[in-house]
Image (cartoon, rainbow, N blue to C red; front, side, top):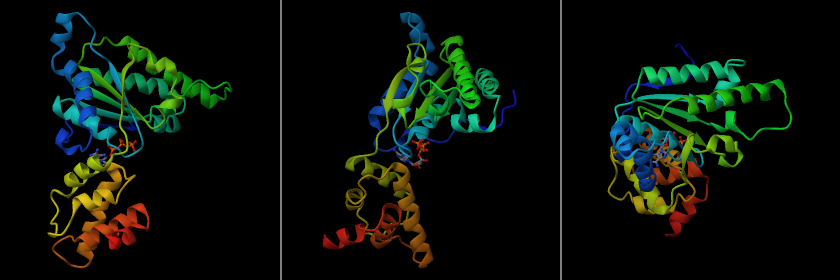
Length: 270
Ligand code: ATP
C-alpha cells in the first residue's frame, strides 16, 4: 500500500546506550515490545497472548521516539512512524483507510514496529459536539481500534503509541488487548540530565574544565531534546570563535540561550 505522511526506516540506528536516564523504561519496553518480537515461542509455551501495544506518555522531547526506535533497532524491525495529528489534518476523509494501510504495510514488512506519535489527536475522549471534523476523527479512531482488535498478537508487529496528554485519551483505547502497558517518560532529574549530557557530549572536543555535573545542576527542567540542543549550541559558539575546544563558557552561553537568562549569574556565584 502506498501511504504518504508516514516515515519508514528499515532498521533505525538508535541503540539503548544512546538513551539517557530511562533505565526502568527501557526494561519495560524490552519486556513488552521486544520480547514478543524476539521470542514469541515463550508466550506460546506458557499459553498467554503477548502484549500488543504500549503507550508512552510524558512531555515533548523526553525520548519517547528514541525508545521506540531503539526497540526496532534491537529487533531488526522496520520502524513505521505515523503522526496522528498530521493524519487528521492532511487526509480529511481518509484517516480510516490510511490506518488500514499502515497495518497492512507493517504485516508485510514484519517484524515491524508501528509508532503512533501524538495519538491523542485521534483518540481524545468522545466529544458531545459532533462537527464533521469530529466525526472524521471518530472514524479514524474506530478503525484504529478495529485494527488493534483484529490483528492476532503473534508478536511480529509491535505497537508503540506516544502522547503528551494521557489525561484526554478515550478509555476505549486503554482496554486490555489494546494498549496493555503505560510507561511514563518524565522530564529528567539531575542524575538523568548528567547521563544525557554525557551522551550528547561524548564526541565533542571538550576543554578540560567542562563540568558536566555542574551543567546538570544548571539545567533543571530541561528535556533530553533541550540538553542535546545545549551541546549543539555550545559547539556552534566554539566554531564561531574559531576555537578547537568547547569551553565551559560556551556551555553556559548555550544554557542561557536554550533555557533563559539567569544561569550566568548562578554560575558566577559558584
Ligand atoms: P515528542 O513528544 O516531541 O515527539 P519525544 O519524547 O518523542 O518527543 P524524542 O524525539 O525521542 O522525544 O527526542 C528528541 C531528541 O532529543 C532525540 O533525538 C535525542 O537526541 C534527544 N533526547 C531526548 N530524550 C533523550 C534521552 N532520554 N536521552 C538522550 N537523548 C534524548
